[in-house]
Length: 167
Image (cartoon, rainbow, N blue to C red; front, top):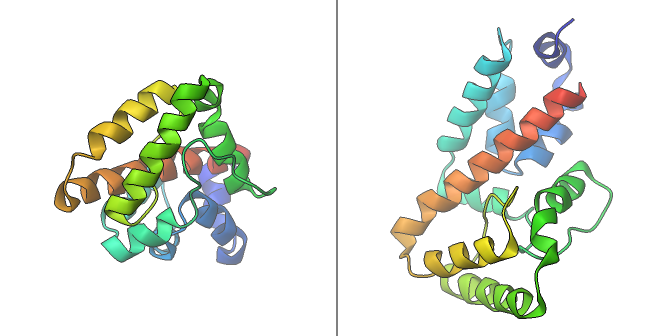
């Protein structure tokens, strides 16, 4: 049985925690489950992509609630916490000045937009993340929301790939 067949055959209750770890917006996981059965991995990923793009702003905020601040180590033993630590691993080795500047940028971002700064951190250095945070601080709300939604989408798809690889 291939991975997609396994995914299609598992009960919702078995997949819901994994999907929640990919994206904490309940509407996203529900949409992914509702479209089963999938014919291929590509079809499943396309449906997950479409579900992420269709999230309302309140649903995106629900998804953000599960993400730690960039540079903060996610606590716990959950898959979500482990993935967050892995995704931010390249960002952990910065010098003290960059680390402090990133904390300040996070605080400024949260004050300006009312939620955590979310970025697809996999493969990025802390310096690159800091530069992106500073750049995004110049955005207005209307410009920033689609960027945040896209970052959440990219993270969810990466994590869904991990779920599929573990089946």
